[in-house]
Length: 337
Image (cartoon, rainbow, N blue to C red; front, side, top):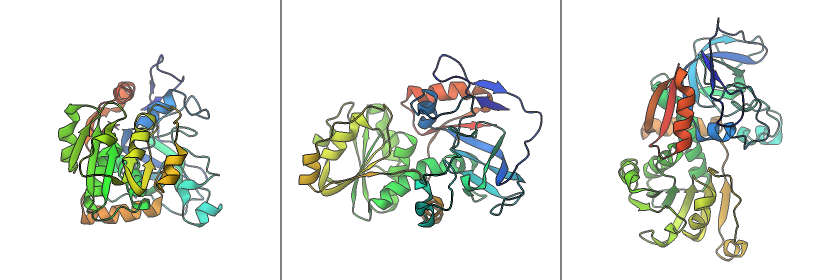
């Protein structure tokens, strides 16, 4: 079984198709029997057509975990039986970022899951071997599926922004998957985590994920409400609606990590404010394998989790995406083939 996006937009449902048999890997491809696949907000952005290069028809999904059941003749990294989880895409291995180990900044990779090649809303996922990283057996499927895109995204952003014990960290969109992950990771690093949510109903969930304080604000004025003074690092998981307030929450020399772009709006930036206060704005792309290895080691010392809003059968993939698009969730929706 697989769920396929045949037309951009929300007027046509995802189409459920049946498979006769597992596919055969070619070249550097591996075949993974999927245990679970997360439904990410980016899947909904893809469906809306906000990425001009999305290919349709296509199987969505870049948050998958499973077992390798087949390898192509040129595969060198994986063997049948290993458990793997997906990155967002592969990497060429030859460009300057790849040589420096920054594979998530590769400009030559063409295998972007759910955008340019079929993704994980399926019983079987076929992709180049560079699209995967090793996933330990003991991590349960729903968490393993979303580990990279939620915890990995938060880990990369917060560690590159220099979060350490005693840092004051602000997280917007703190009830979502990445936001909840950022609260946990900040807390596990000894930082003081402050959550921003839109509605009162999310306060309990944010507190449960490690927030020392929760600010409820459905506009862009939360920087006036932050207890304890300015912030060292702000992780903005929303985008235009919260960006400038996140920026204005920062202390002199503070860092804003941008990981969300939910609405797609452009932002008016007061560059003079950024210059005067010596602020840094850091765009943080997906985690690479080195990030994930460090995060998994941290997870063994400081166990992390991601709230799972719902586990749904693959046949309900369309409804799952519509739930995610409506927003207001606590964590991730996960599809189980």
